[in-house]
Image 1 (cartoon, rainbow, N blue to C red):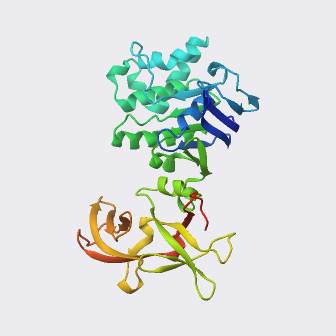
Image 2 (image 1 turned 135 degrees about the vertical axis):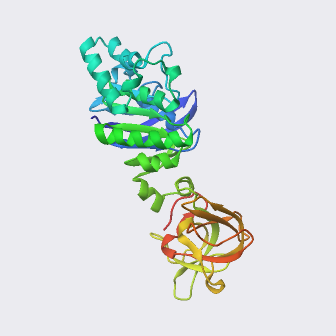
Image 3 (image 1 turned 135 degrees about the horizontal axis):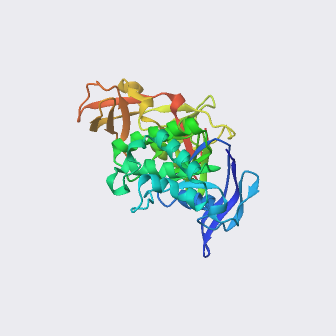
Length: 360
């Protein structure tokens, strides 16, 4: 399949910039996920790749061809929309075949491609039904089938699972992952759901207010977020973050001062005399109960969430926000219990408070 290259892509509505010079190179066969909160520009960027939005500046290439001025029909891509966009008066088979008929494909070729896509997506028994007779998951399979039969250079997905309930989202996420493994197609997928992003992507692009915050493999973003925004967005529950003062010890070691303890830190490419206020982050699974004398935080448990496979507790330690801690599922803890916790210093993330950039 074809690679896609975006160089300094910008989008303005009038004089208002909404995409600010995005650079992304998508490898052939890669599954790339654009993720971020509502309004961050991810769907706008996808629509520019599709040709549904005009590019204000920059260069977009599909394969070796610059496609900035090409209409969507000439870009040889297929898009799967959030709302399925099926023709209600047509059967499943007719919906899947429609694009091929418009391109003048022979009836034999159309039948072969529709049958093949139906086999892949388990739609063989539904080809004569209308969209209104299908569940949400089945409709999304039809929309995917309509894209597959075209054999495009790339697939674009715009939040395809957001209209489904939780159980169907999981099921369809697995179907999409299996489909990509089978077809090895270049895929750009937009979602606001970071769980979808983490489970589907070869690489993730985290977007914020029209800017790319970070591009990387899912676990790289989780383990070493480049900014406070990425740290808070990637991971569920979110990373604990709180302000901390940085001081220098007598032996020139830098220490982060927490409410009840100090953590040795290493600030790369920084002056060894650096001091001041940073934002410290630590994930819930990197905290554990300890003796009061070695604690970073102490307080009462305000909320306990037992989710079956996991237990999360929220500690009121007098900080700006409750501290989230992950416990074993059978942990004997309860609301109102007073505990002390500390973390693994290797799990500490430090960010500049002013601009949110990572410093360790």
